[in-house]
Length: 171
Image 1 (tube, rainbow, N blue to C red):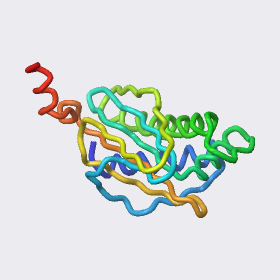
Image 2 (image 1 turned 90 degrees about the vertical axis):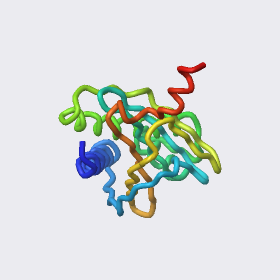
Image 3 (image 1 turned 90 degrees about the horizontal axis):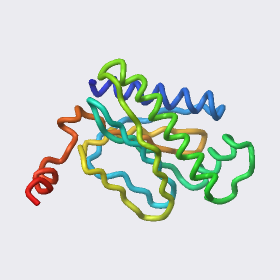
Image 4 (image 1 turned 135 degrees about the vertical axis):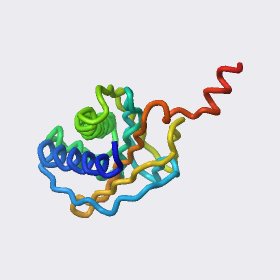
């Protein structure tokens, strides 16, 4: 799957979910590549794994206030602080966006599976995936809020860190 196909699929998936499920319009910003692992200074991150002939991860990250706004729109109830419902809402948002991306990618690479979302909330943390380090970073603006979708997606044979696998085989 080509880089532009991945970008187009993520843009379409994100716009569809935000429009249909949240009634929000989003505006994509400049896409770039980053080798740094996803991190958050103060906010929420949801991670969804992708497996099959191609493998990778999709990550959605946002500020705590934006996560509360997403929860309010999903559940039509007030969310003044990050709690279990807010974390569930962000996890479901990631599941839908990455799930829609997965559906588009399957037309190119074949059947894929998704993991259950993992959602993390806090300050000054970094995630680490033991796979490809070339993340496509797709920022979006929603009114005054900024949120980010990151994805790395590669043929499964290229997505595993060989040095780690080789180490495990020698133990």
